[in-house]
Length: 237
Image (cartoon, rainbow, N blue to C red; front, side, top):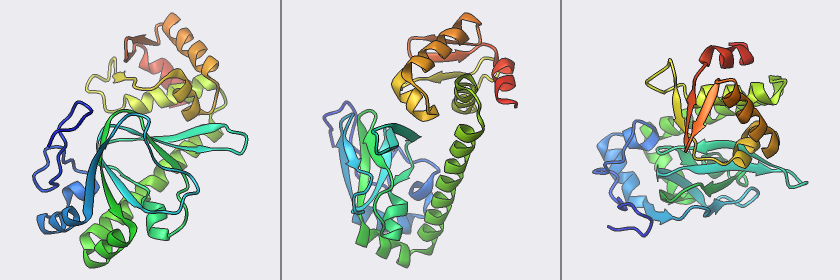
């Protein structure tokens, strides 16, 4: 089925070519077929808000294609991006399972395909399928671990260059070329600032300094780490 955002909308989880090793995608065929019967597939433009911090949980979203920003905002209006969700991740699971309000806001960072499952249907699905319930527990555990890592990064990093260096090393950890790792930057300087808890001006200044010192160079949307040992030294790795 076609979609208005430049990609084909895939509605059958069992034969989906977007399937990954994460969460529901790797479930046995019978369980996946049961999931397929209760989910609703839709495409969203960039900037679409899926749910808002403090909203009562309606259900979970499974990200099939694209990226979603997960953020929280203080009473003063300061935003902190907690994570950039990747395909295969499930959004809003903690609130859906616990019955508490969504603790974060989820907004698409680019055109996305997502599967939505109503809260009641999702809880019944977990009760009937132990393998899916185990996957859900593993997913929640991974989310918790990610939150701990971010708290550690923000709380123990003493400077903006150190925080940015840590972030760049995390982003390029899976690069096939570890001598000069590369990563596609799909975020603005403002969004990077919201991830590491600083200002846009500071991010721009630090990136300019990294470029001047040939530590990291941004060309178009591709950032290349030219001197990985220096970044590791900055974070004490």
